[in-house]
Picture 1 (cartoon, one colour):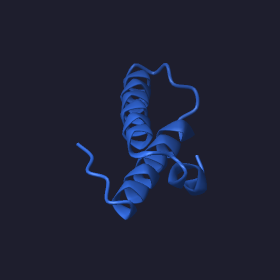
Picture 2 (cartoon, one colour; picture 1 turned 90 degrees about the vertical axis):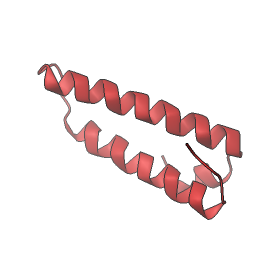
Picture 3 (cartoon, one colour; picture 1 turned 180 degrees about the vertical axis):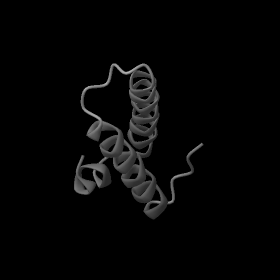
Length: 65
C-alpha cells in the first residue's frame, strides 16, 4: 500500500484498514507457526503496512486504539 493512498482515506477508513492489517498479520503468524506459510516475506510486508498506516494516522492526528 502506498502512503499517498492512505492520505486520501478518511479517518474511519484508516482505522478499518489498520484493523484488517492486524487480523491479516495474526493469520500469517498462525500459518507460519503451523508451517503452512509459503511466502514468509508477507509477514514483513504486512508489518510495514501497519507502520505506514500508524504513521499517516499520527500525521493526521487520528486517535487509534
